[in-house]
Amino acid sequence: MNEFEWLRQTRELNQPVAPRNDLWARIDASLDESATPADIAAPTPIGRARHRRVWALAASMAAAVVLAAGVVWHMHAIPPAAESVATSMSPDNTPWKPNDPRLAGAAVQLDAARMELQQAMQQAPDSPALQRLLQRTDAQQTRLREFEKQAG
Image (cartoon, rainbow, N blue to C red; front, side):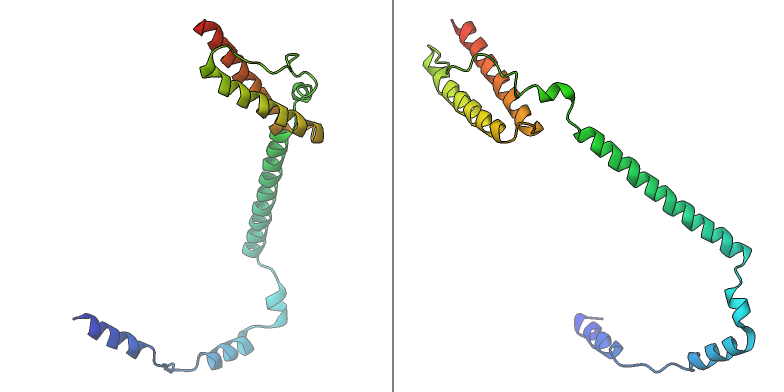
């Protein structure tokens, strides 16, 4: 069988097909004969158990969502020690100029980054992201000063 025969067969499948017998007539007849409104409305013991399982599943999912939201909220809460980072910036706010020309470019970049972060901190003093960036910049500046001491 080649591709053309497959295409021909798939086109033949696109034709409408009439059912062998009408199902709706049998469905209507069975509903009229056996079901009364009292039978339909009366819940069975199996139905009650299923209903309880559905509610238990819904309650457990709701509890999981509440738990996850609480964990996320707790993780994003600002710890009290982090709030004081904006006020306890290093006392060494003067620009630092190393004697080694290899470190001078990095020192200028770190000073500029520190000044920009301080300006941003004035606009949003409670921002944990800015506080982390400022801490990283201070740490990098400290490492750079240590490199200069080691270089002599």
